[in-house]
Image (tube, rainbow, N blue to C red; front, side):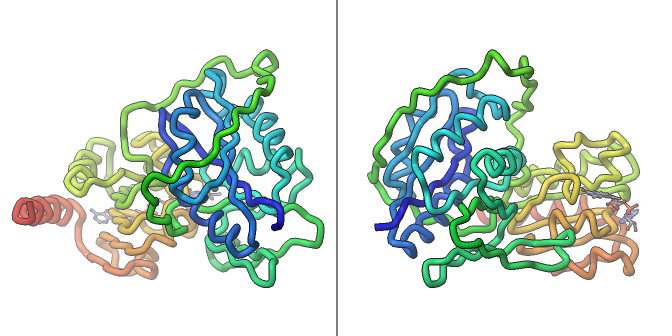
Length: 329
Ligand SMILES: Cc1cc2nc3c(=O)[nH]c(=O)nc-3n(C[C@H](O)[C@H](O)[C@H](O)COP(=O)(O)OP(=O)(O)OC[C@H]3O[C@@H](n4cnc5c(N)ncnc54)[C@H](O)[C@@H]3O)c2cc1C
């Protein structure tokens, strides 16, 4: 039996984020290919209560660091704790989410553990006991395959919403080991975090996203986008032009300097499709673009293109979806 495969989970607001289950599922596949066990690192406040449930996704053992000081991701507290636990596991491979926090944690862990990091991977394969990871480069224009040199510890972050999630098996429980580590809170310069707790669907986990751009002409017109999103059960996104104009918060921004999203359906309204925007949504499963300019670059990526004034189309479309939903329910 070789060393274990270790995943690092994300526990926020009392729950494991879905990407933790995706990472566990991918970890299980790699562990099986290597003939290894899957272990997990669970860090957070109150995480002990649900840690054993990771067993439903194939995790054999969970190392838990549970402390009120670990409520939110703060690099100064999380990184030393995560690094110590990973060292304790002595894994063959470490896999974590390529979320905003996960990318930060991954880079810092790589430095601490002298590991080789492949960030934002979209596919992992294991051939002849060797791991290979596929990741987008040049803002998603092409993909590259990464391999690790003999002796290097592979550290891989996986893009949310891309990897298939195992169907959870009922009743499986992982062994839980509580880890008592000194949390360096005293050294932390972060005194508090103002988190958005408005209960919005998190963009990176959304199945459907409706995004608006400069074509909306002003912040008041986002009511139209929000209404469509509400009818579809979708999250609301925005282009950088809309965020820079102060129409939407930065947490809504999709793209190279915003969030990378992979929903089943991405509706882009009044967005031209600049390369930096497409870097964030180009791998969505279905893309629908609404733009009155038939030459807009977004149509090169779109599965369905509507050349129309969004102020005509979006309200009509919202109404049709509403009617359809009413007949289905
Ligand atoms: C380093 C760097 C990083 C960047 N990062 C990002 C990023 O993360 N995300 C991002 O989005 N951008 C990013 N950008 C900016 C990017 O280059 C574009 O400027 C931006 O995406 C444009 O936003 P937009 O499509 O909303 O606006 P525009 O390009 O102005 O497009 C507006 C579109 O709306 C259409 N339109 C107008 N009126 C209507 C109407 N009534 N009905 C239908 N269609 C209409 C127009 O035809 C046009 O195609 C970055 C740029 C740089 C240099």
